[in-house]
Length: 141
Image (cartoon, rainbow, N blue to C red; front, side):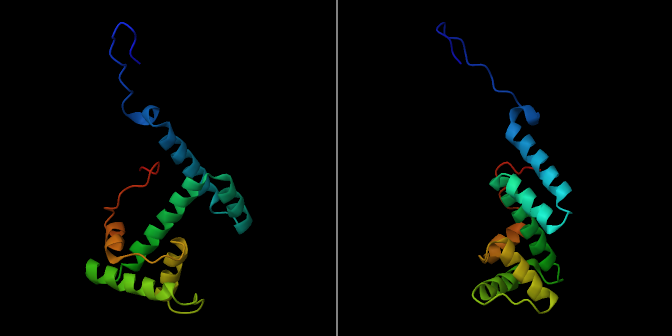
């Protein structure tokens, strides 16, 4: 803050959690959520209700990203696998949820559930697979 005498403003603190207390809070809440995530469904429901929406959203998207990476581990070239998965997601998003089926169908269903029913474009799938996606706010690693 500048004073009447014309002093320069004080520099902002750099680095560490002191500069970004929200990221420290995010890490603490995520650790708490991870610690309780191993419990039963009722415990998870209580945990989700207690966490701020941005933390539970970040955890959901992290699980989605992990499911996408697992679904792409097929041995095909990355772009071919991403285009194939994008087509399957688009197709599955217009059909009723199939409970039975092979592992691939279950993976597609899980990805759609974690992405709230919205399919992803193949390029977005590629960015997730190669971890070149823009990081979410307050979810830095």
